[in-house]
Image 1 (spheres, rainbow, N blue to C red):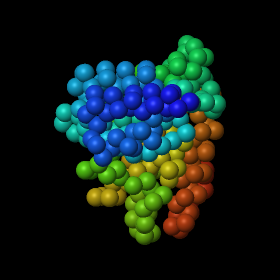
Image 2: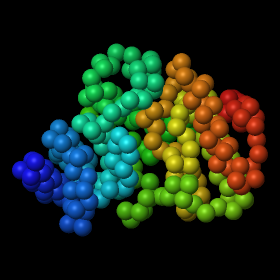
Image 3: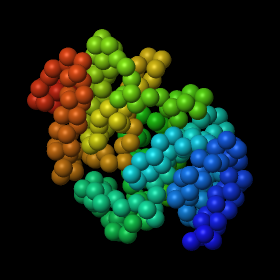
Length: 260
């Protein structure tokens, strides 16, 4: 066990050298060493050789299935989302991807599902952005790695909606934009976010504009569970904003979302 741990640490040390990881971030990467298996490191090398990633930074967030890291590209800051292959369970993935007509032919092997999920998030972000929804711009999907625009400044990410102190007036402004984004997703991008809540919305401190994130599970309207997922999104948004005195029924909000 000790030898295996030493091998993993050496592997991360090699990665930090190759990817020009800053010294202050190397310990952070070692904490997250379960993310950096050999195939993932090879994929990161590929992105570095292509000139997409110039330097890797520290961890931004850690989720059940993926970790997000700060990075630097040739012209701007980046967010590098790495879906874990070896330790991911993806028990709930079937409801989101196997019934998606865009991915009907995916084999039921973990690696293939992870790679398809990464491509799916990239495609969903492109569709959302083209529809006028503010999302991180996807740059490239490489196997289990999604490189995106970093939503923040000087290595500091925008805060999650749940962590922003809001007055009623600001909350109303943000709510109205979120509803419009949900409408654009539905009517223009043909998508339902399917996991929308205060945990998957960032807030730009400069103008309080929301940014939708984590769209790997988003589905097209042809998906058999699209209506169920939309209803859940609606309930989540109404629940959160009810604390600011915003009172609408699920039927009223759904009607707004479906309006052309």
